Length: 219
Image 1 (cartoon, rainbow, N blue to C red):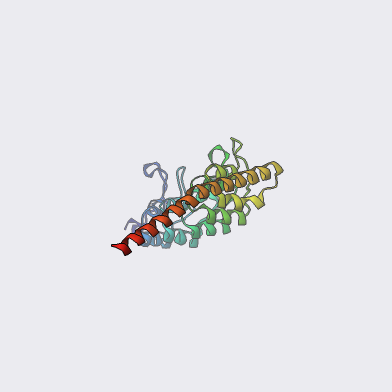
Image 2: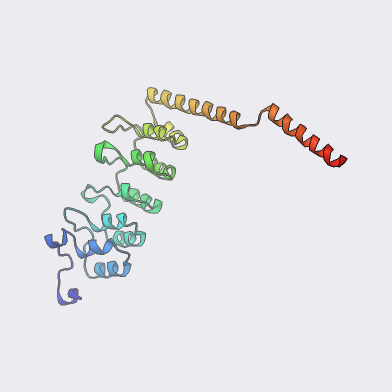
């Protein structure tokens, strides 16, 4: 390879969209290439305007490459990258938080990871628990004035609402949560009652069964 001929393994130029060879390799499934580049002196924290190796690996959801980059000294919170919002591995999510990822990092429109998890993550409860464990603010409002609790209620996620409630101090929001949970419980009970067979239906089935049994005996 060119590296053995003295090529700069950390070359960063406009012809490569401000990416190093390691950054390109981190977006593939070629763990061996990433390990080779790191062993050859690639710096996991050199990056251009658009991306850096760790962020690229997270976007590709390549857990093994992320581990290799972290072992080589990749910095989690460098350059303000929104790593948590792209992480689809609970294992990596915890590792990033343990290594200093900001649980209250503001993305576009002032939302945090907790906002987005409450909005569109089907498995959000486990991620929300981790964020709260590491200091996520359940009352932080985005630029539209919505908190993570507002998102969870709007998306009808009672388990997450119940999880967030103890972390809410605002009495107005506390009352809003209590009212929402009560209304949802009433609605669920009403639906269960409507779905259950009535006494008349049960009697009708019983009588029909008795008549059928008598007819079979008489035939």
